[in-house]
Each structure stands twice: as C-alpha cells, then as structure tokens.
Length: 271
Image 1 (cartoon, rainbow, N blue to C red):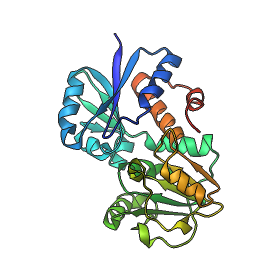
Image 2 (tube, one colour):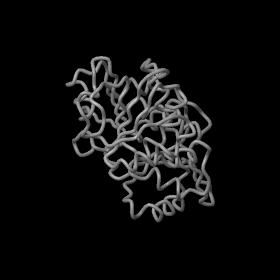
Image 3 (cartoon, rainbow, N blue to C red):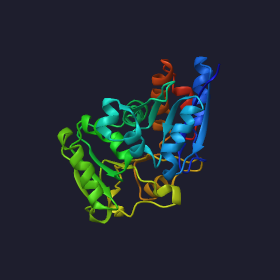
Image 4 (tube, one colour):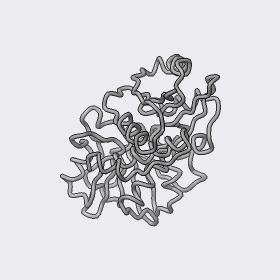
C-alpha cells in the first residue's frame, strides 16, 4: 500500500515539496504519495491529529509552524531540541510524533558542497529570528565564522535566540535598522518578508561587491531579496532552492532509509 506523506504550512500553495518528493520516489522506487496541506496556526494541533488518524507516515513543516510543532511533538531529536524548532515529523501508527530538523544540514550542504561558499572565518549576517533561523544556527556556528549577527524587526526576539545558542558561540543581536553601514561576507534572509513582496528594512550598505547573499525562500520568478541584493551589486545571490532539495533529501532518508541523489532534482528547478 502506498505510504502517505505531506507538508504543512500557511500559506502552502507555493510549495514545491510535493514535486521534489515525487522525483525522489521515482528515482528510488519508493511507493509514496506526498501532498500539501494548508494549516492555519489556530488549527495546528487538531490538524496534526487528523492527519495522523488519516494514516500519514510523515510531514514536512514550513512557515509558520516550525517552533509550534516542536512544542507539540512527543519526542525531539537532539538537533530539533537544540533548535527549538522542527521541519520534519515522523508519525507512528499510534499517532506518536517524533520531530527532527533537517534545515541546518540542508543549508550547509547547499552552501558548501553545491555552491562552494567558505564559511570558516566569514562574517555572517542572518536576517530574522524565527524557526528557520533556529534551525540553521547550530551548523553555521559549527562552521567557524569570525562573526555572526542576528538582526530582527524586534530586537528582543533576536536577543532571545542569541541567548538560547550562546553556548555554541558568540552571537550579536540587533534591530534591522541598528546594523552598521558596512558589508558582510554572507547575508542570509530567514524572514518571510518575500511572501508579501518585500525585503527586510536593513541598510543597503550591508551588501558589498564581495558579499554573497542567500534567501531561504524561493519562487519561480525570483525572490524580492535576491533581486534587491543583485541590484546592490552583491557578488553572488541565490534563492533557497538548493537548501529546499537538500533538506528534503534528509527528510526522505529519515522516513524511508534511502538517500536520494539531489543533483538531478536540483537541475530541474530554477537556478
């Protein structure tokens, strides 16, 4: 019998996870289906119960549910516990929910293996302090950056995240508009501003001619952040397609015990 999987978020119509997992299934011969479910925040707990009762074996989790899902899960892996956020659920036949977080390994693989970005000794700026940032901070701190800063619309939230991870390394925290007018080596957009057609209100000077920019979001026609970075002369700017595929491959491996080859899937998606 075909095993059912899916992704939950709000909104969810833009998600390409169903396409990616269909390609993984075709490549590996795994008998699965994969659907997208729009779940409003107030309905999360009830809908998780409904989906488990409907026989789903696993779920990916996207904006805005990553932190809430970690609180609702029955058990967390070490990396989900450390992040305080989850993007992957494993659903047992009795409805027991195990939560994991594959965002960090997905980003790290795309940046270092696929794109050749050097993180050791780099000055890294992360825009946003939500569940996505929590998922990627451990691997970024573990890569040995010279400096890492979280900037957010509310500085209290940025400081909260910085404090949570302080045992892993030094993290600065500030409001978007408090950022110094100087370029960074790598700027990562972990906000949802692009879903509304905007970019975080940061000084343009954070982008210089040697800056690499990475948007955790993605869109068929390009994201506002990547367009903004390119207009400001960033050396390189990418959407989060590669991270999406790499974190999906890690989830697929957790669910099925088979690790798909990401290259042919990445080649089918926008650059």
